[in-house]
Image (cartoon, rainbow, N blue to C red; front, side, top):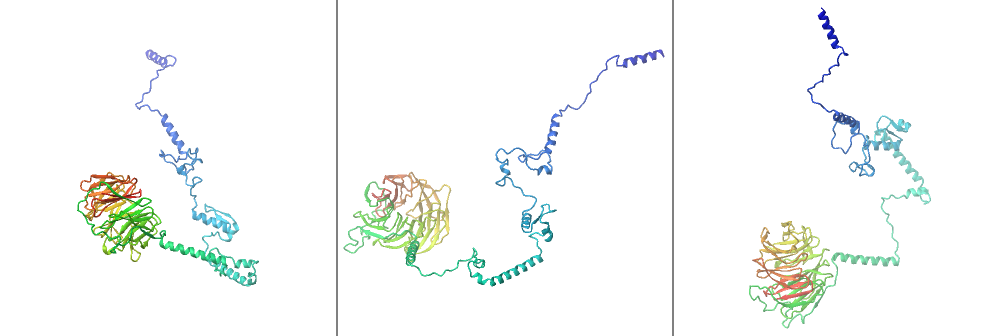
Length: 572
């Protein structure tokens, strides 16, 4: 017992705090340690952002916003790029941002007009009324747009009754209506702004008024005559410079000499200058040899004159044709050479008699003709085609003077007209950088040629064999197109080396088809070999632009050139 008691006492002493300090054991956990500071900040920011309105510039929302947040007005500092603090994307009115209210436009108009007519209107909530309460009770809360039919009928009857009473009062006030000082007269003579003017009976004119009316009528008549002609009027004159118009045998001066024949079929490139014709005071824009014979040379000048020169004998100017008020753009002989066409910048096309110098007829549409052509068929020499500045090709019958057809497909001014395929078709080029092929007499394009690399083609000539077209392209090259069905570009034949950009230099062939010829912007005349496409020879012909070059139809080695220096030169 004593041993047990002593053991109990020792245990009690060991467990008392005063006897020894307590042992602290460290708690252990198998879970990793977590820093909850960032989590607490995120939760706090989300809770804070849930109470704020959404920023309209924010692209991503990290929580589900409430309805109040989505539709809350925008708060915060002013937008840095707007004076009034509204971002440009939020602005839909010159005063800022305007939003539709909870009331529709029809409902607003209804209440607005009702208030102005009856003095009351419904609150947008639809629960209360504002304005005149008595009028509201009297009309049973009606608006201007929902008046019952019975009320409408009653008002119509009242209105008709008032109109009848007003008419009766007017009849009673007839004596007063005759007095201009009364209200009745003003009401009777009140004029509606939509009423027609009353016809005033014209009294006799004074002498001064009669004279003015006559002068006005004359001016109007003259203006009408000019309008009919459409082009600028200029007196037609012609001067003969030769010795006599007929020789001792009675032959006209335009007849070809009997001994004019082709020497041989082989053409040669000219080397030297034979003759110079100088008569134009300004540049020469075009030259044409007399058809088939070439004993005369027709020239169109920028001095408004057309001259015809002798080639074989004297080499002098034979006749001058003056009928244009502005520079002459193009000329064209008829098949027999007895007549020719001229086109001027005065908007007139004139048909001349070569021998007498008389103007047979004048044509105009009020637009500038850039090219004129007669149909090459002998039985259609009365058909005239003209390419105009208003994108049209106009066809006239010379006998009647009427327009018989208009070919209207081009998108720019028409520059050339070239007949192909036995004159059944013709090819036109334009400032729209395209070629179009037409059936003669049918204003429908049968072939349209336009490529991104193409340039405008202000001059086109047909090869003597009729199978090829040579087109002067403004990117300083001559392109060759087939005249067969497909009008394909011949990529193997290309003539280059000359500078023609900006100038409508004429391109031409030798009569045997062995050489291609063209002027250029530096006054040179270039000759290429048709087969090899190589430059054969260049001649320095003019000081300015060499605009035209024509090969003589009979004398195979002779060429005429014209330039903007006002000279026409003949080369052999």
